[in-house]
Length: 254
Length: 309
Image 1 (tube, each protein chain N blue to C red):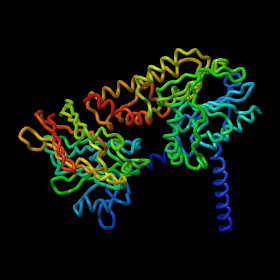
Image 2 (cartoon, chains in turn orange, brown):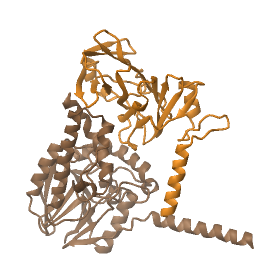
Image 3 (cartoon, chains in turn red, cyan):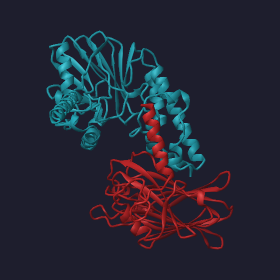
Image 4 (cartoon, chains in turn cyan, yellow):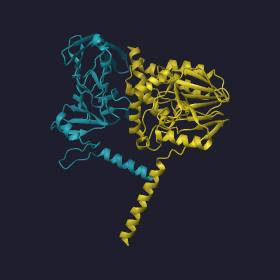
């Protein structure tokens, strides 16, 4: 039994170490997802890509609450060499979660919470300056239903008078400052009967000069009342700018 | 010859499959006599699975001179029916009263087997089961599969407002707590000194937090519970104890959980980062410690984050 485990382990290690290529000479999805090619076509097009373990997609083993699944994407291994990061969940009805454009003064690391409709691979594809996508993946178990459950706010009119209300705090870390904020927004997916999609689409963290340190595009799978963290190297005055798909803009000085 | 042995192999395989199938759907309940007239059906210290059929819970019954009193009915109709068979092997007295300790599915989904009895629950528990019961049942079908066949929610029939009830020569005292789910019934059999602590107390099986009104409330009520004199305490999950060690384990862990979540929020940790926290040695050995800690982070951390802004 023990020998068998070790053999399985070493086999797994081999598989991880050597990329597997399909007949068309494209790397094979280590999670063997039926939606890999479909999503790759949408998000990466025909660009070159590799599956890269240095891109960490942190998810729990099981989605205890399918409307609030924590996801940490960490691409610090490729810091300084990144054009953008795209994250999606293969088996969600709306696959795209976010696109993130990090500035060199920001660590390419972001945490947020998402909705999932069923067990799914969660991806983060990092486009480096040489035009190659580096894809990190994790498998998330889930009972599901997160995208078609009405937002909590739907049963409680609190959000109507507090829409866009933001709380934030800066937490000093050893090598950077962590910016964490929470904004009141229903983040409706449009997949619940008679509730159109209504979600924050753009997030920017801007410095005093108005240039963006972080630029992020969100999709409806980001959980209601989003809680998002960024890690910024520079110590300076920043403010947060948000815009939803109805054109509401929200600003807050951090 | 080859073909013959191949067929024999196939038939043999089929027979094994059928027999394990039959074995797999038997809860095989074994009553333990833990005090005079008092029998415990101790569940496994596991999570719901297709292997255990949801039998992860402690249920009990007390045979009084008048009839039988049952504390919790288990996770499925099949369990409830198996429980009735066990009771019938011990006594031919009728089952008079069933108490559902709280709204969680492993404590009331066996109710269908007790439709001839009065089914009591705290008034709020009755409302919670009416509201959430079907969703719980659906989730149980998903998690344990065919064990659930024909299980439907049978609501408690009587809201329990009394503090004391005499059944035969047994005098039962009821305590209404909230720490685990917002409405948690604890029952003391004053005649035998057995305290049925329901899921207010877990022992050697990590506690669950999906509906707790807050760690502070739970700790406060555990301290009150610890002041109740008893001879034997039956936790909702885990082995029976004669002293307050189970309550102390609960309080110790809950305090650690509270401090850990508070500190993490003060450091700006993300929810997923908090999930990676290692349990201290004293809690790491508790069954499902890691799994339940991760679940608790999902249930509780957003409020700590909110407070830290």
